[in-house]
Image 1 (tube, one colour):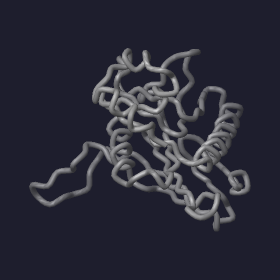
Image 2 (image 1 turned 180 degrees about the horizontal axis):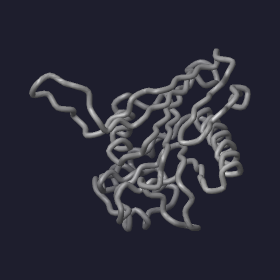
Image 3 (image 1 turned 45 degrees about the vertical axis):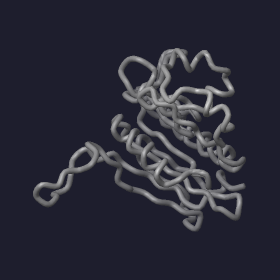
Image 4 (image 1 turned 135 degrees about the vertical axis):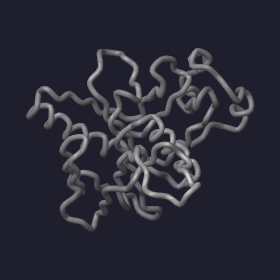
Length: 216
């Protein structure tokens, strides 16, 4: 959930990473910086945390299996970890619910150039406008894969998982019409619990997840 309104009013509209680090950790963890603009994260219900954790664990299992079979590949899987969008500097970052990045030295910052997959677990508090804005920033940063997880509103379960691929080219458009953004995501996979085969996808490595591993 977002922080109390009093906290929102006490902070400026724009901050640097250095200023953010001076805040109490509990408060700073609720904030993303979009080109220095303060954006408050919405913390979802316990189901949000539960399914973020379970999905992260399953993707990490698949990553470890891939690395075991192909030692030249090395992947790290994290949850709620900052992804810094610039080559340098830290005042422009997003915090996906889960992500996959190439292996890095200990305590190194995760940059968008190292990140191959980001994912968001949607909660009732997430608006479509908010998610589209965040998705657009992931795409503009060149992150190849984006996953979106929808939760049921009445039951503690996942409704569907969607995988998107980054499209950097564009389809033919009418003369004089240009895309609003230089890069966009296209949906390339969708799974629901009614499919007994579970979640199966080949990128950025082989991902096979049984629905039983994600169930309540």
